[in-house]
Length: 463
Ligand SMILES: Cc1cc2nc3c(=O)[nH]c(=O)nc-3n(C[C@H](O)[C@H](O)[C@H](O)COP(=O)(O)OP(=O)(O)OC[C@H]3O[C@@H](n4cnc5c(N)ncnc54)[C@H](O)[C@@H]3O)c2cc1C
Image (cartoon, rainbow, N blue to C red):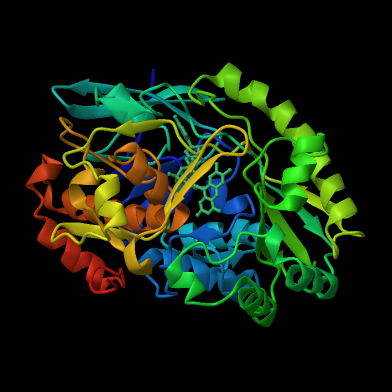
């Protein structure tokens, strides 16, 4: 087998977590390799969905640092719509996924991250919890890459599992949140859409948390959506419009049609609605098989929107996400496991290295979805131990595979916290490599926090 070059830090997976981890490690002076199985870095940042959990439900930023640098790059390119309230449960950051492709590349380029695309991280070579090498596979064949510290941002925890980490998956009954594919429609007319929303608030999910509702009636909230001036809305399954369409077979069973703006100039929105539930997405045949059903739902929903939702009559299908989105697979067991109780009570921790704020958001099959807001619309802390796989000496993790119970995962899996976690492990890995620390658990969390604060991460306040 070929030997690849050696690095200070190797990051597996270039989604929201991996991009921020690699940028933070390289910014800290580490020679960093970012390995990605797909053709372009960015993961779900390129799907069209808005970035949730970067602000809390009161509209305060809870993620800073590298994530904000990425947004600043996007703004320079003209692809940043910015924070908006969905007037239901959350604030999110709306982005143009086409320009996000360029922004991600600019961020990685600025810090000279070495990017290896079309390459699968296959397995680790490890002894007693220490990873000595990572076997990579691509068109050139197999090679082994070495580094003092590895970061697992694969979403599925591939690296940590190969090195011997334990994990949980889905619910105890073997259920998984649905896989979905995002799509976009362009040429939306906002005037008729807002008039429809004001006349028929009963079709929409509005003011589901008191932090957002603030004592307003549905009619007042509909007026606030219009005042915000962007097409942000959520057709609910228990509202008459979507509910009757599902009953009659005009629409497939779904909990939502969530609409978020992606481009003002194209008058374009992203629609989050398609779903195939209870697929184990680590089984590649099952994941691949879901795509044709999801594609059928895209066509069905686009037709429904044109037929039933004023403002969409002349809208055109304008883009499909580059891949099927995965909400839930493995949760690696870490030194600390974040609980749903801590999330919902907005619990703070002295070992915090990132924050989350998104409601506990567990999509189920058909039209079912659990949505429970965080107390007071505030934020909770993600402790360092959630990013340290139990039993492994030189592996860190961030993003979807972090250590949590299913409820906490249902909140912190969104991209804002994934980017905060990515920043934390990237910065920590650069210190570990620089100081020759042999076991990641020997790095004091106070050192990580100090570095993160100096780089603009939000760790304090925001209750
Ligand atoms: C349908 C859907 C809707 C969602 N809605 C929202 C939303 O509106 N807002 C929001 O903020 N979040 C949303 N989320 C959640 C969020 O998108 C993800 O949880 C988050 O993007 C996960 O980021 P990540 O970096 O951990 O993993 P991913 O984005 O999954 O990235 C992992 C990367 O690792 C690569 N990879 C995996 N295994 C390997 C390997 N062995 N070797 C090399 N590369 C590998 C993959 O190709 C991928 O690029 C949604 C998710 C889905 C699926």
